[in-house]
Image (tube, rainbow, N blue to C red; front, side, top):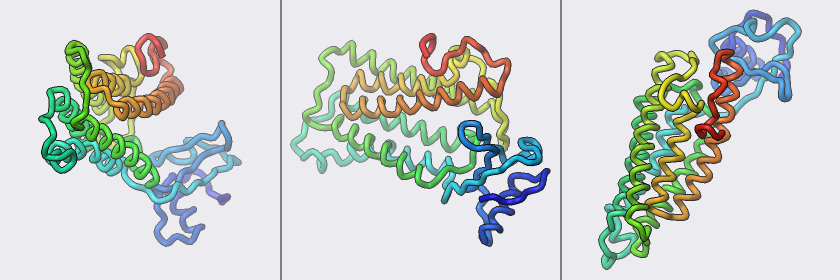
Length: 283
């Protein structure tokens, strides 16, 4: 859409102007994205500033309709609910799933089911009470994509961990190491989220350089400990579904960490040069 907009205009003014141009009676500002320029050089601008803060007379402002939106918090609650409910159903309906003649769950099976439940219960708690989101919404299509990933692997992991033919690792030491790595990583991940929460005052989109703990080593230690948590989980439980879940999710977190690291360096001139992206001392 190409339309004349005079400076200074706020992004909300742009939303209204473009919405009316498209004959929308109630334009949905959160689904609109404005950028200056095109290609790799394009730059998006935020809702709390005016166009004069980003553009000059003669700049071409591009508009993109992102489609129906859903809140970030809502997406997280729904996608994590699959991981929250899958182990509960496996525990309480095991006789219906595997038959009444199944053996009792072993210690490793209990760890796998309760551990996965605890992980996603933590994620739901963080979503509701800890996280402060930089954006209000995301395209609703992300809800279906993310939910398929979490729900599918959550039920696959729970099913195979609770299965009567489940075979635990031969070494008890391996089991205890996996459990230890899982618990320490879960607690460390939670602490990273507390640090990130405290960086952003409530009701703002302010960004600061994270400091302390593993943030002195990498830009995204929360992602690092998320991967380590699932590594420990898989060392103890050894399911194909668990390893696939970790590999796919870990690959996505590496991509996110690379982008966040690049943005930190662009935004803050005094950003520590020795910090890695996600893996301490490596990448």
